[in-house]
Figure 1 (cartoon, rainbow, N blue to C red):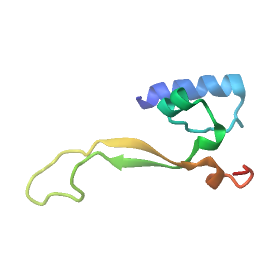
Figure 2 (spheres, rainbow, N blue to C red; figure 1 turned 90 degrees about the horizontal axis):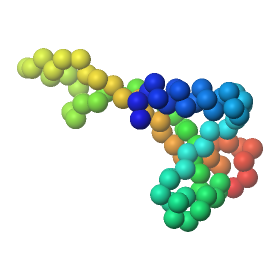
Figure 3 (cartoon, one colour; figure 1 turned 45 degrees about the horizontal axis):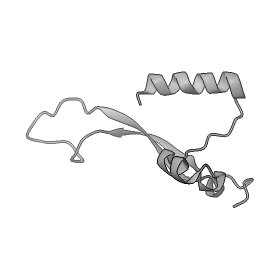
Amino acid sequence: MILSKLIDCLTKAQIEAGPDTPVLLCFEEGAMDEGYDEKCTEGISDVRLIDDWPLPGKSLVTYEGEKPQKLVLFYDNHSKLDSSVEA
């Protein structure tokens, strides 16, 4: 998914559900196979821009151009991220 599509989806969700709606991540295939269970959901633990390059560092021999970045959402079980959620 590209960032503009994600922003569109989040904007629609904010309009329909409100700005304080919790955001959870769920593995789609698992939910389809086993049914949705909130205990199995994950929450966003970090958001980072990461250089999309197979080797770290900068080459001193070859100009490699601008390194494109990807927006990466890291996740963990939501009960570990929110102390108000019972495990």
